[in-house]
Figure 1 (cartoon, one colour):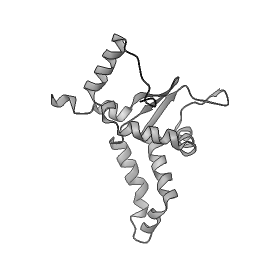
Figure 2: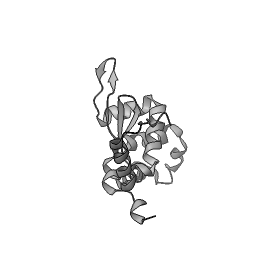
Figure 3: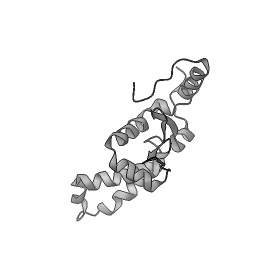
Figure 4: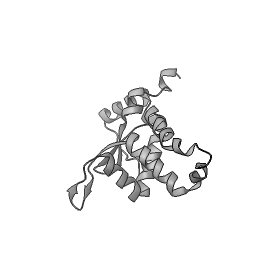
Length: 144
């Protein structure tokens, strides 16, 4: 296998790819290995580097809030097809935080897609595009 097939596309890793959640709903998801996510997690944890505060990192609610903040700011970068009571639910970081807090299922899906390295490999992206052009049935990520 050519090494280029193993190396993630830096642009896709940072700026995300569209992944289908369910019919009509897609999320733009960046890689969990992108430098913005890693940097944001470090900045959020920095106040707890002090030994007097380090014990606070044992609080699961605090850890969840920090992870969701970082994910909403650097991993969940957009969406298509979401509504709230029949009104389009536009993407914003604030709305992404609300969505991730209120839906553990969507958060789990986003995290799973962010760790799926095939989403960000150039060869895999080109192969998927070629398959779409040739016409095989498209399977959504949830149905796999």
